[in-house]
Length: 254
Image (cartoon, rainbow, N blue to C red; front, side, top):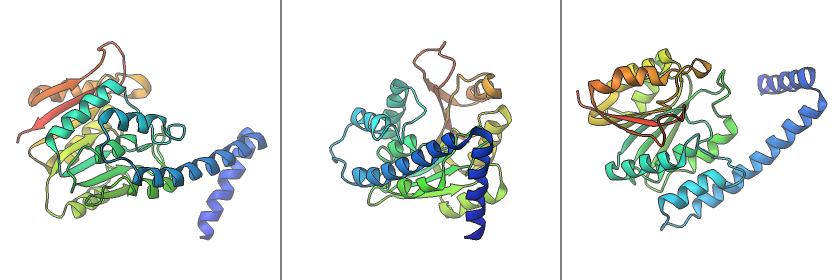
């Protein structure tokens, strides 16, 4: 508890030094607001109409409570991807890179009704795209009655993290691996090399941001071009010139 309080004090002092009291008050106000939104959203998710369709779910994730769980996605691509997931009904799912949780929420509504969904993300990313601990209670509520959502807050490239994933799988294989974490060339390559070994025969590996090439040293595009022709593959892309987003999917036949 003492170390946690010390970290909060350091964070507050850091904000005051760098940005002044006005920024501190804004930070605290937003923290209170979004924590309150998270509580409301947890109840709202539990009360969702069971007759939802994909469009209403996507709208819900983008618009509810100022986009608290807004996905980093292009809507048309996201809908195509989720339609694909619905046809496959994967039971064992691993998402690398959860951020605001929008895609995690939508996956929970399109995978198998008894799925085990593992979310893996950093506690804090150097790029600022991760999620804070207060979101964990919210993410657990994404699970349907017979589903299980497992949250691992760690480095996907760490052997300890890989072993945690294996422990949750308990000898089972991943049906759908969704890679949307470290967007550097080496990062996405390492995620694929480490976790594809856990993918089921005829399972699927999905890469997001396959059009990102060079922005902030993001090079998913480079790795996607290297890997896709080794497997059966297809893409969901709205516009080849958009410079970001895009889904690339391979069927992982060993």
